[in-house]
Length: 110
Length: 126
Image 1 (tube, rainbow over the protein chains, first blue to last red):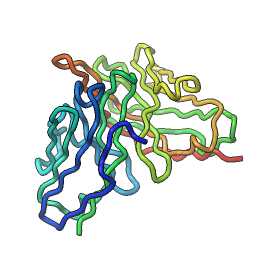
Image 2 (image 1 turned 135 degrees about the vertical axis):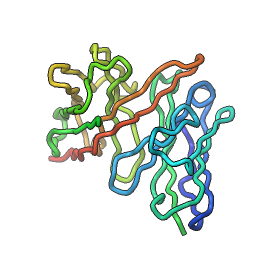
Image 3 (image 1 turned 90 degrees about the horizontal axis):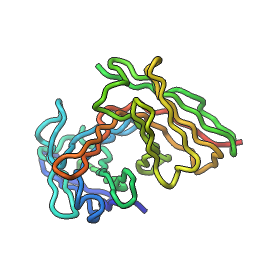
Image 4 (image 1 turned 30 degrees about the vertical axis):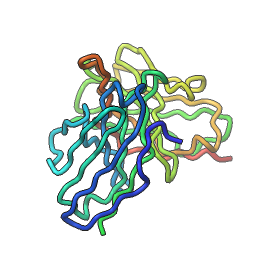
């Protein structure tokens, strides 16, 4: 059981948009910044978003992040077959003194 | 270009100690801006933070693993290491090392792993 809750899967057709939610509490998302990771099949996770909505160099602006209260959202626009991957949210939990991750969401391009 | 590479045995017997090393290349592990961490992923499952270390040797651990984990750093070799003792089959996972950006910003904590190693599979079995 992950501390952060994500939907197991989302899907959409190429070119469409998907959003992935990440729900937490005041001890984690509510009072700290959220990061998002993309894990392509058979590879290591890759940082997509940090500080809720900032993209590292090289990450296309098709990927966006936002946060409201104790929830965060990752958006992917112009969906491509190469976006098929598992996506994880993560943050610091001040009550647990622990880095916490969501259980991951599998994105499928129909 | 910063790169991280994990190394160590791929098979560990139950009750023994898992030992892995992460070699950092392309930058100094002595950077004051970063921590260095270990994350694992059991087959088909999600990510679990194991712990992190600063170049000064200050270490921080996942509370659920703290009693079994030791992370150390060797700045002369630009490496940091993980030891997990008394392993069981539940410790079978891909183990990743990563650079951790951890800082306070406007009263909130920003915590992200921005560079990852490729990962190494460790199986606990007799």
